[in-house]
Image (cartoon, rainbow, N blue to C red; front, side, top):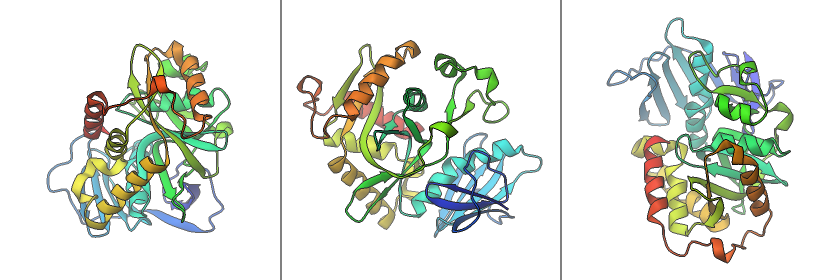
Amino acid sequence: MFHYHAYNLGISSFLPLPELPTSAGAGLDVSIRLGRLAWSPAIPARKNEPFFESVGDRAYLAWEPLGKYSVQAGSEVVVDPTKEVDESLLRQPLLGVVMAILHHQRGRLVFHASAVEIDDGAVIFLGNKVSGKSTMAAALCNTGNRLLADDVVVIEFDRNGQAYVLPGYPQVKLYPDTISQLGQDPDALPPLAPGLMKRACQMTDRFSEKALPLRRVYVLASDAQTAVRHLQPQDALLWLMSNSYVARFGKQLLSSDSASRHLSQCIDLVRRVPVRCLERPRALELLPAVVELIEADSRTRADVVPVEMAVDQPSRHYASQASESSKIA
């Protein structure tokens, strides 16, 4: 077995997970093992899209052509792969949706997002698919800040209700044009898996290994101008809930006590943490100016919102984007 740590958990795995920091094996919390699953999807799984079913404290997923996965009680993952599947492909769900479900089962709040440390606090980026979450994280790390997590952002609350972002693992997934803009050679970086465009960009020397208090949430939106705008609570809550990693599974994961906890966690976050809309052009050459704006805003007092940047009324624009995000997150 291989031993790792991520998101403040000790992990043992039958499969090598080179993206994760290694561990001596003490204090293991999660086991990832090979096994045969009697469960089968009710309908054939579609390529690159998981079939999902929740039964009691166990969640099942199936991908064509990867195989089947089960996640139980936030502590055990069983992988039943198809024959001759490439290990790099098999790892992608383990480090993504499977990891997200595992943390949800442990009572943590999980977002499809990216997170960065700025001045001993955490900021996270939410947004629709290909909105630039990983790009913003990488650009901030390029100026001396540190990565906390990419793709799966896990939040845990202390006894006083303070939200902390847990350190994931030191990798960002980027497209080649973004890597070039950040001054690196995309051809020198491996693809995430055969046939995938995104590259695995290691951030070992720019990674934060400690849980940090959440200071800001930024919702990414495209616009001709660059600005940070305050979101009203109802808009902020809609964005948080629609970008929850487990929202895609609807009532199967968000039912009864689980749904109540999830809603309460999102409401607490809106009450305690400023949620801003970060509007900016998508032009990669303008990233330095956007990074400067984020760094400046994150260092202001939490209760200070520039009057000229405030949103006074609930925005249909934000609501429509959040609704679309819930379909593809």
